[in-house]
Length: 422
Image (cartoon, rainbow, N blue to C red; front, side):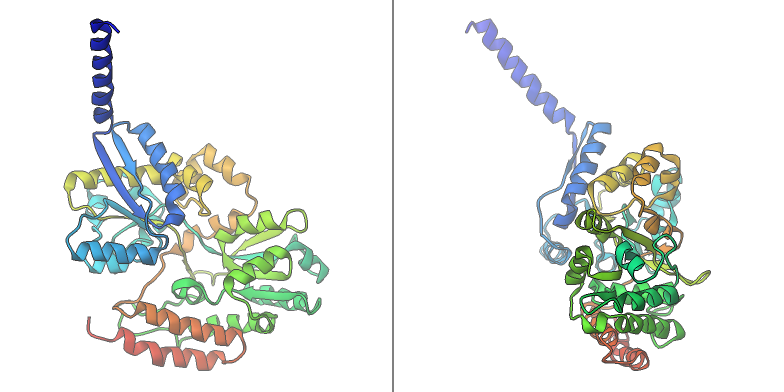
């Protein structure tokens, strides 16, 4: 090779290397549970396409949110660097109380043009801790009611005119349960993570786990008793005879042996695929008491951890993209979550077309107007509280404890755990 060619090759290599360093002038690190990696990688690729100078880094990390939480707390304790953004389904309260998550209210007030400021209220409410916002939801999973069309029709129901309130849902489940011993009429996911099942039923009846200033539980109330009576109703519709966990019940529904399943929207696509041509999976919005009911939801929430002002701006740009038309479309295409920014959904032909292909999508979208966050009680006893809640809910749905006893017992056992000095 001539000296000229060698020089040109060297200059070309230098240009490539220089160009690469110039292209990625900034790197934004995002930590999450491994179940969100595919979605975040896809959002990152879309963001990079619109912002060539920014590299999104989503390291392979802990498998679960709990493992991620422990890793973040350990790093904070020993002074190690933290990611710029953390995307989790829960835990904002802990991160806020530990001073790790950054309050977003000042950014929202100062930048009304941000999608974060203009988006549907649920985007901000899911990241609320007390009176401040510490995260922005970029996708949502809501409770829904799934019906097996074949079993509905065999039991004398009308799969084209399904019930929308608990009385009708439970009446239909009891009819299905009478089809035979191999069939379970209805099943409600009473053992949901983080007491989410209790929150669904409490809030949909207009209640809440605690009062506004977080001094007293509000389980032993009309809303709490109504929630427990729904659980009892599912027990009487066949669940009490079926000793199944949540995951086993989802598999049984997909196999065609459960008529009505009260669970999360994340199960819709899986159940539809498993059902194939054997029966139609029909989803309806979770029953809500009009005017007073709300819906507790799950789903990925992005919280800013970096304290550097310039990197905070970069993190906000990523959140803004995630909540925009392209970002919300990527969420819908690359995860089991649904887009939740109604303003963008209504304005995006692409999103409308995508959701139109999913006949059960309205079971989720029809509840966005009353969707809220996933409430976590104050203090350090949340895991213990969740265990107590699951234990009593399981006993009620198993017909081993009455609704009246359950609300009293829950209040007695949990109140001391949220009354400790903090």
